[in-house]
Length: 83
Image (cartoon, rainbow, N blue to C red; front, top):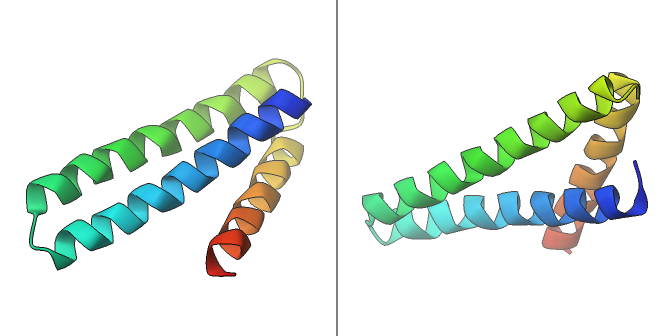
């Protein structure tokens, strides 16, 4: 992954986590419509992540290498949130 791809992936992972938290907050407040809106946004971000992996593979990168990079970024994002 290029440096800009890594930054985009990091941003995407943090946004996925933020949308998940927004779902929890909306549900705690009893706002199902807001929770559903955040769910759709989170699903769109997850789809974008999958599309980025697919593109990496189509450009000749190893799918497993790219997936490993994404997994490391996901772990970093989770650690940052739980710290």
